[in-house]
Length: 256
Length: 275
Image 1 (cartoon, each protein chain N blue to C red):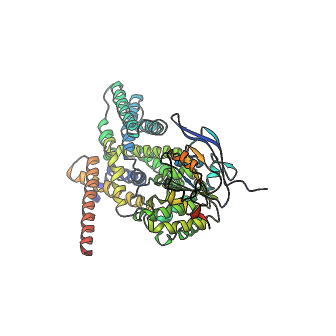
Image 2: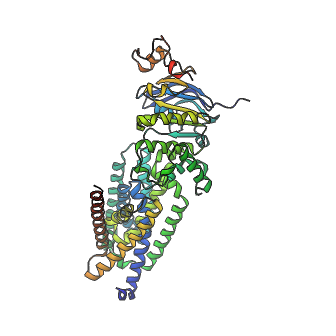
Image 3: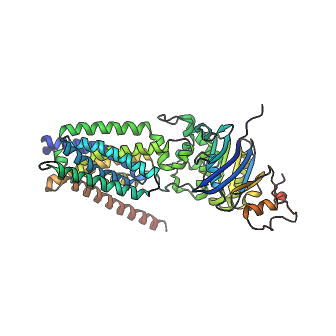
């Protein structure tokens, strides 16, 4: 029997106060897929992630993560999430290791404390993002890029099957970008990854597949997007991305 | 100093100070790190409604406050979370409704309301032994709840949305924390009074934060500071014959401000040393 899709979205509709934010979104994503979702700000990218995470209830449609409904709390242990902004207080008294440990909450039931195995897992996750040496540092005393790495470790420590990253480049400086994508390329071998960004150039070089989102999702299971799709998504003619190949964009960068 | 301990009311006062400091060190830490000072102020003032109802029904006003404060904490929490009302608006409404109810019920109570003043401004010297027992029970409840839910409260306080993603029952945790704040408020009414509670919830924890970045150590240190402030304030109020509740707050506030100034000076000196 075939493994269930890492993420399966069928006919998803989300409305806020009567305004349609997501309209008839369909998406299937499998193990080891690395998908970039691009689209203008306000196009519904974060809403889509929040729906997958079960943080908002869709008005219509079905979302399944590894075959389980995402509203099911159990499905969330399968998802690792790196938010765009973590709205945490920089002065909060917590060190890096304890922040990462919070990614194990799903593995330990209420009333029970973390175990040695959780601390080991947290240190392993910190090592994978090269942040182990900072484990005792208070979280607010790290740079934005370092904090971002800690949040990636927090997402990884629960051993997710699906990793969602919301605009991860927002707080990563250019010098660290390359290393960050190398990390994602390594992680791709163990899970499906979705990275969301308004910046086409930031994601296009590294991901394997691209989708465009502006209320509706334009996706053909490939890295090529037609100019028509982009135009529909961004609602203005886009010319500069074709690289001389009409109706084919971004292909040249991606061949590996 | 020692000889004042031979009076029973003084012994009771020290026990009351100790029991109050335990609750405000632990719960005050959450109030400070989760930025819940305003809602705690609302819960504290709303408790006056319970005092009034207690008088009216002829029961111990503290018991009235216990029930009423928990109910209004839950009401405030539900209003904040389940409606679109802005948080500070919801808190402000409950804050004044609670106080108004207290005034109405006291007016409806025939006769004169004795020691009403001590509920508003606190009088640690008049805490009866029966209230000490209640305070001890409330402390045990608080310690038990916080040790059972430690990792949940920590995650919830740090990053609520991530907690929700991890399947934490965020709303129930919030309401539980509000109930624990309500219990702490009831514990503190006798010590510093409704109007000054917020100071004892915030000053020890805020000062402890200056010395540690670990939540657990912050709680322990805050408890220690709370004990120091209440005992110091109590002794000073006895020595120079001032109201105990206000003296405790001024001792805590004074030590806190001096410490802040000292730390600032120290860090400036360290920076100057580097250059």
